[in-house]
Image 1 (tube, rainbow, N blue to C red):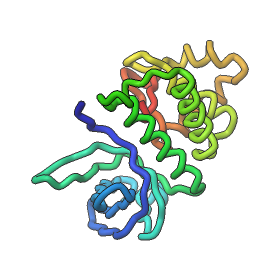
Image 2: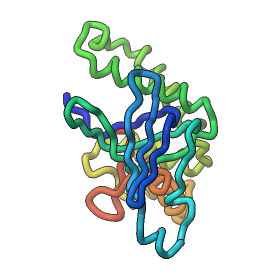
Image 3: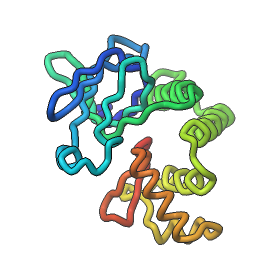
Length: 201
């Protein structure tokens, strides 16, 4: 199975800024450090609309990167869609559990084919609890994220369906939660601006 989009959690070892992009040397402790390329939004930079958008993160900082995996002459690198500082170190542990779960579910070995329902549900529960608390979501953000993540549809879930499922939330709460989740790189729009899917599969 070819993997193109990944989430990596690690520590920045080196930062190499240029005019158009920043290259972070990211170490996730599973192998040699990997280069992560983040393109600068030059329009924002020229208008000075948002200082945080083009912020260069210093070495020694733990970050979560969602991006596209690239390979050139046996050298792996990433192009980042979203880079976010990690405030709570529990997020690192939560990410490790997600990686182990993904490996077990995709592995072709007898261990990977194990379909013990209790084991799968306990790993899933730990993963969902870890995500919500590690990301620092509010209650409404957590509800919206969990509904989007659990949608099996290829085009994701529509805002209308979110309103139907989350009757306890106002339209404003749903829209503001969606905006937060998009800005933080947890979800993305698919077929149009009213359908959303989780970046975590």
